[in-house]
Image 1: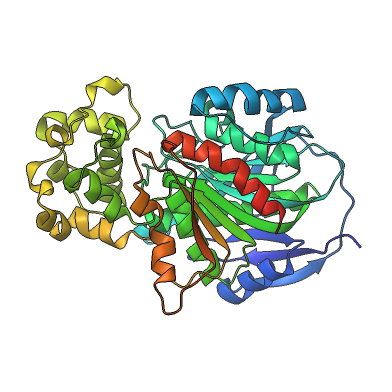
Image 2: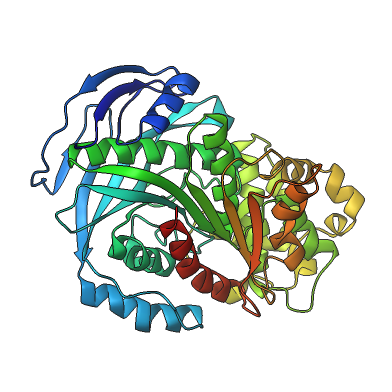
Length: 427
């Protein structure tokens, strides 16, 4: 029997968005219960050829932006990704080609009174005769360029690896660009937890609407992410669980689930192998917090005056040279922030302290992969979620922290991705 298609009208926090949920009665029921959906059944339809682009009455639109054949996907797995990430990729070869779509969808900014905006993301669909696939939502890591994100996959090495590993082996793959990235005209919301949750959640509902249009459904839901995207994945998982949405499994690599711990580490507890590019974490978060939490002048209190204009260009993705940014944080950051007490009491520090995604009882099977030589996420931070969950009474055994060995930040991701796939395959 083909999966049931259900048409729904979703009214999320101040925006009206038409959504079609299919193949997963548990996801639909959860969204109905949590978000007040009005539902009416629709009949299953046979898959048909789709146009290159289309608009859906909900305000969601999509366009076919290209595709990759099996040979191209395997070149990513065997040549491109190993060269970029610096480790061998142990993935199984792709077995099908992939179609790539850019989705444009309406959303809202929770921190700005649910102001309506438009965001973008990627949908990758196996190019096969099948109509039912498992679905993975991938949340991307920190990038230097506005377009090094999922909906511009040719510019994103991590996205290409995910496409080759998952979509090339029969998974639907989606990826939000986050607010301010991709084709979004908003300022970037780096580390702004509510907005990153919203971008991910609305990208999922928009993708399900597009999939219905393409006469495709999903039978399972997985989420994953690396680095910043690991944090976003944890925040997204919290949002989904609170909404009652069943996630079959979640996985991260190098996930800083506690942003206060991440930022405090570089400032006040530096390691010998700390990344020189950690400077960008402070630049992006300083301006993002200023814009999204409406604290005028916040970035000026954090960035040294002589580097403020440069930092603003970095945040706005204007022209600059990476070697212009001081790698020594004591030059880039105002001296007061190297006092742990000052940092904790500052507006910046208080926001960072509240930006955590691990202090709830996690229901979903979760694996956090960490690298023992990771220059961004320390071993302690990589194991934090498990240690916290295991410390609750007799311990929450649903969460595991798994070492990828002596891998650096990039190597941890590339090593973890095939392991995510192997694990998801068993669910």
